[in-house]
Length: 219
Image: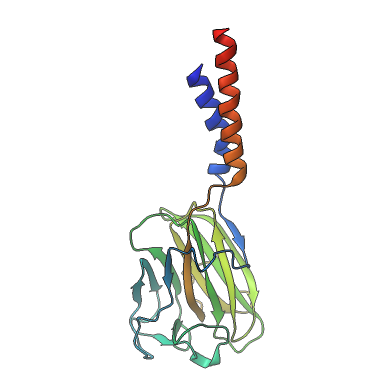
């Protein structure tokens, strides 16, 4: 009976535990509780930095771009909304895209950051893709204003890599298509894992239900 009770509890919890990542444009990661932060403040100020950088456990890599084309000054092309003195921006744009991973190789849980456009055009499209072990699990896009940043977060885990790019016009949405892009990134933050309240309640109820069944069986 105890085995049945445990199985019931796991069955009730599994939909919540297996939920796919959710996307939000609200900053739901409290600065006081975040576990990691990459503000690129460890970078030197230059216009030709290399294509990979790790800070506080998060690695940012420029893929298919020029070997040394990252502009680290947060005021690059007067892109508004960046924070601090440093950020990550391909100098004048490039033909690649940006990858964000954890240096440990582990999966993300809750992560958010500023994603901006270096294009002067008003019709820019920001594309994102979430991967797990190299396979895409979720992707999407949104209209991004010229020379500005938007906060975006991916919550509830289920992925270990984030791909980003910002094109002018609609673009194709395909990473690695060689089209020019100009995505600016800043202030990547990671929040702690949170056990959803409904799952906790279900676990408690399943335990109570199991105790009731055991009591009846003994009676």
